[in-house]
Image 1: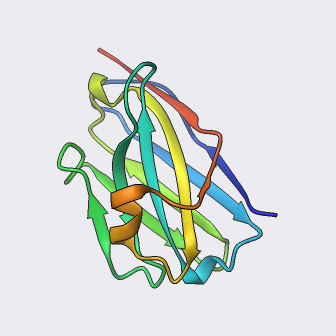
Image 2 (image 1 turned 30 degrees about the horizontal axis):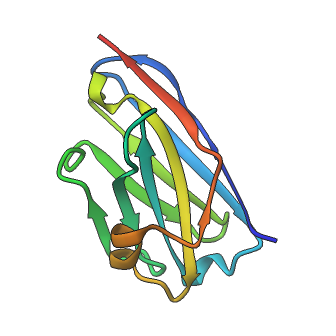
Length: 126
């Protein structure tokens, strides 16, 4: 059974940083693309970042490019989202998602993955 567990969310002030983690189990982790999405209550889910299964392709939403960085540790079966220069509009619940084997980062960006975590709240105050 596949599990994705996000952590690292919290309350920070604008301009500060957070690093989200997504620990996975039940996946052949080094063969799946991973991604992060976010969604505020009453809004549609928004793509944030994706990384290929070999870690060579990085995709970002325009709103977070140059501020956020996605990375993965295949030995730890974990994907990370480093968020710098946070803005109040980054306040959302952040979800980790995993694709199927040999999924691509582009596919994750387009439709999300096959598996989803429960989300972690990020709140940025002014």
